[in-house]
Length: 451
Image (cartoon, rainbow, N blue to C red):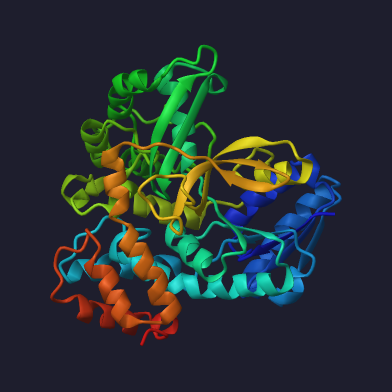
């Protein structure tokens, strides 16, 4: 019997999505699912949602809550980390706004730039504690991480626990899977593609037609501008939701119906995306401004109305949506588990794992997002060739990720300052030490380990 431990299961919306994936998988019939979370009220809501679904559909899964992590991990084959610390949006506001008050213009402030650094400094220590418990109690388990900032978390965990089977998962690749059929006028089954980079900083590397083997990238480059220039962005989605009260789930690999939105700004949300497509001749898999979190000049060319409207919509949507367990596949983790359990090997589109030569010019220790072959032996990354311009953008992140990991592991304020001063997003440095002290004071419960 397969045992899956969900750490941070109080995240009910995301937990409901994962549970729906698990419940619809025949290979996981009868699986033991254990919820672990520091918030007893939140995890009880998730447990009840799961148990009600099991009872209603006469499933044979076991659902339990175990607040002691080491007891929860006993006999686990798979562990899922989906934690966030503190008040997510209050802290995100600090990550984003405080650096701006010190003269640093950044986009979003969640995964890259100064905001991404402070987010990483806050969330990595508890994730390391979870991983330490896994190595002690269930060392052969495969650990899936869904928390952000993905690449910094994975890089640090891999440095601290190099033998741990640790895989970062993100559904951003779903954006690409949704758009390619529309751009090319082909069913998904006739499109073969590979993408690579860092999480939220990845591009389409190759795409071809399955039936003929013909390179489809020239068609993507020709057709993509018209497709994206006319597509609704978060400004339109937010405005329509306010007018009609109708929210739209925008994340996942399902098709999204936006036909009810009639007025669209040209390239809404995608001004930065347009610049990457135009000057680097590649298609980012992130079709909004998240790509710009890693780029110093992104603030100049981003659609800031779209960024703010995304943030407002995302916060409002998470606060208002009713969690439901669906029979449709939402995330990419369960197909990986199914392949590992059954031995039915397949190619997974995107996992975050140590580079190990999969992307040239990047060090082996850096966590990269690449496709992988999955089967009973686990995951084996696939090498992907990227153009020199994209590699140039990616190599700018090497020192930042190295210093982030070192700052956490050595609990060093000085290394935090260095990580900021090598970041291309940081263009004013005289007040960086004061900004670090300000942030540590504001987020003292999580950052006061820095000395």
